[in-house]
Image (cartoon, rainbow, N blue to C red; front, side, top):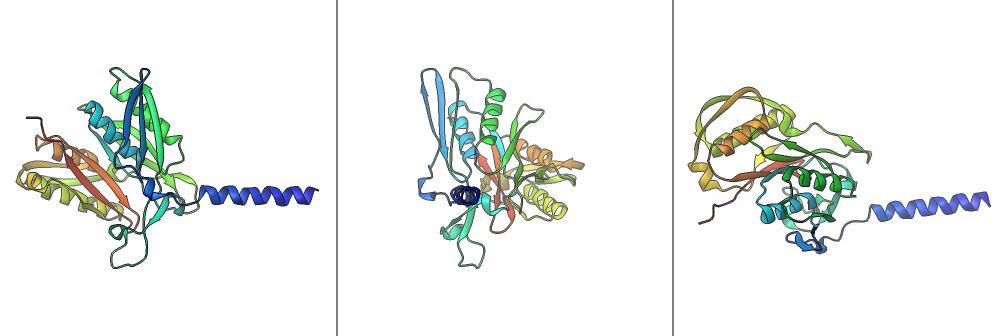
Length: 262
């Protein structure tokens, strides 16, 4: 009997592991998170490769909160899902590409006029208790802005482990006039050299950044602070999404612009 019980237990364990590792149904992704209110409670339902970032987008649309977001490095197969999207493949490869294995995520909080910091902390804590990839921290900056920063993810052995947050790296940048676009590219190159991880400017309002002259610099200043200073110097409402690309093993620094209402 003991042998039978042992075999049964192992069979169930293998089945449970296969269920946990089953690829997500990417066709179920939402274009944007659904946000609704009922009985004095705000409900947000997200479903995407990065459901936490999608939730932050919903909060921006609902309350105008502009929050920067940074991926951790997704290197474990347990944190990734295959996709046939040609745009997600590695360069010059016909093999399936990979995306972060995010999926459904829901969170709720009292309606009314919520406190931004407390609500963001609740959202991050709720996400960290979910089975979605990555573990995040909420950080604040001196002007009162907030950052959601990826600090942990599964390692090559499949265990959640701490990572060095890439934008924490101190860099030195000569303070001299440049376009905002050139300044961002230079900061990204310096991060890449310091950390040995490719970092490139991705999506951005190029005409705006190319036309904005900024003077940003410092000695051994965190890359995040220099990036924040650069975007603030444009006097536009800009925020970033630092996205890890599992195929190139590098990051894309995407910049988004919120036009002012006419």
